[in-house]
Length: 189
Image (tube, rainbow, N blue to C red; front, side):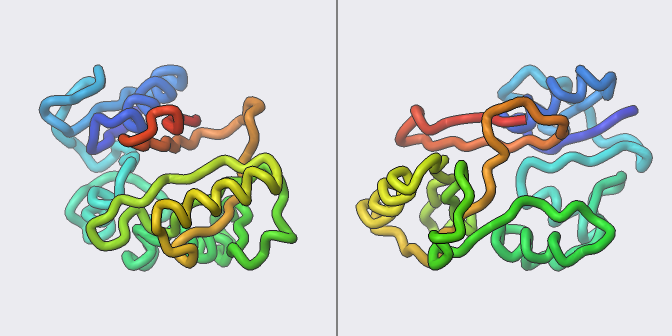
C-alpha cells in the first residue's frame, strides 16, 4: 500500500515512521524534505492521502488532489475550526465521534487530563499557541493566566479530552510546536 503526505514536518515524519511499522510506503510530495521522508510525486489514485495541514486537505476536497482520504466530504469552513470540526464529527453517525470537548464556561465538567487549545491555528496574522495539557484545576488556572498574559482572547480557546500518557491502539498523529518555548513541543501518535 502507498500513501502520500504533502509536507515534511515533524508530523509528516511521525506518519512516515508509523507507516513503516504497518508496512505502508509513505512518500512526501515536498521536493526538498526537511525530515528524511522519501520524495515522490503523487502517482496514482489508489494511494491514501494523509494530511498534516489544512492547505492540502482543502485541495483534495476541491478535487485537485486524487487519492483516498476520509472523510471525503465535509464543509471546508471547518478546516481550521477545531471546535466546530469536532462538533460536526460527533454528529456524523458513520464516522468516529472524536474526543470530548468543553467550552471555557464548562470548567466544572472537565475530566482530567484535558487539553486547553485554540479553536483556530491563527488569529489574523498571529499564530496561536497549540495548547496546554492540564492535569488538575491548578493547571487549568495557570494556563488561563498565560492566555491573559499573552493578551489572547479566551473565547478563541476550549478544552478537549486528552487521551493520557499510556499507550493506545490508534493511528493518529498530532504535534505541538512552540517556536518561542521549545519545552512545550511534543509529538504524539
